[in-house]
Image (cartoon, rainbow, N blue to C red; front, side):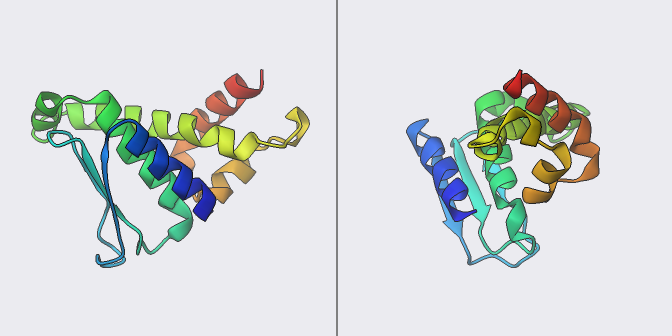
Length: 136
């Protein structure tokens, strides 16, 4: 899992996104993205460590998809849900290659993928879509 985390953090840095990866936060303090400064803060002390790759990919996705003006607006409007959904979708897209590497098409399993990254069940449809697109 640490190799995936390192790859995602390196990816963020190659995109010139700032990254703070810290254990100085409490286990329940969420990670976040600051679209104005193009920085992500990742809580490496998160109480569900297997979610860290998804969290990192999700926060990277916010910086790739939102302008600072969008983020300001979304904090006070219904746009927030749209941005969260888009970031979830992009995050899953970023994680799929890590899961499918060295797997034959028939070995790919959405539930195994979701379990590996401790993903919530409401993301199952997105996981199906992204895995199918990648292997087909």
